[in-house]
Length: 527
Image 1 (cartoon, rainbow, N blue to C red):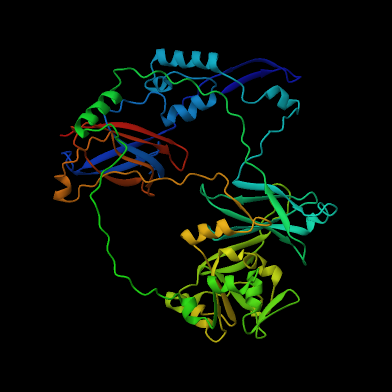
Image 2: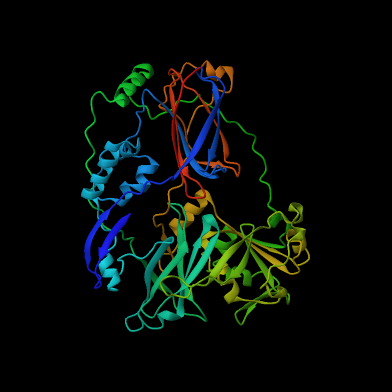
């Protein structure tokens, strides 16, 4: 708590911090099933309860560690992190010590800590005087790609730039969007959040009509400056981590403990004829990647215009007098208006439908209602389908046209033709990226979130595995950062013991759906 004494003018006369220790903790109970013998399966039945006695649902982290090798943490528990170290400045030595009991010495020490390490996160007197400081960096709600476009030529380089729009495609995740370009050529694509190393294809195009090609320059990512991190204390020679590591090396006979040896596996298979996709079987006309390359066409629209029955005129597409549905990698394209971006640019684009139509009636899709906004299969304007038609041809593996007579076998409610676009994948996609023209197409890969990796743990499900001569001296036997507790507050986890003597610590941490902290450390010994 921050207690502040102000005068009538809003000036601070006195202030201090006081730790308000309430009943934030929920309780947990752990029941062990199974033996703790070497290389055996152990089941933990965990129950979480709120302070009021009700079940505590939520996602919690559970770790099972070797007590002899992993000492108890003194500075990283969820309780001290959320309620103490995140609110104070500087380095706090062993913050967990203040909450290991409620004796007078710990209470007095915690109060002295707040008196010496306290700081004001907000300048209350200035806030009361309505003197606000604008934050230097806006609130991040996801990734953002910004940059500028420009045209060639000396005199018209900065003219009519607002007539362009920036289109973005994420082929691997089936995501398409676009944003406006202002008079200076600046654009800002945001409102998405994808894993790291995701490739984004950017291409400017005229919002209406035809305009010359424009070059794209993507701005580099910028980050706030990071201060100097606190110095890590030097490791004591008697640290149990080092002693356990030396024991592992003696058992294993090598110094590299990061590798896990597995038996040699020989994979053999019989070469089978490639199965044709539903689009290929139903298509009345098809263009493969080789045919597209030999045709000399520059866009998907040019390829479609050369297919029998398709007419392109007045910025509309029709097939024998009716409209056509567009499907990309088995997913239906639908026009969807998106909210305006945070930068003030109006943001409208197209996103993929979640309906997978690549299996047709065989998948039981006959009950899918026709999406709104498809115009009753009348002619589609190019503005509605502009996003999928703007894909660079280098990304396209094949284009299939399914006639209106066979389209119902592919999409049960279809009454017109279906244009199926299949994008390249794997090595073909990597080669296509390298061959893409650099004039008006840019490949960007901004930093994204890290994809979580599954914790590896050996399983001794068979007698052969249990008798393996490879030693197992793991310090962490089980680790799951997101164990889901159901509505009754229960969860079950399983793990296998190691070759080390059974003396384990079970650590459970998290926050319930009602905001109560879960923190439990229990010793697990054989009976």
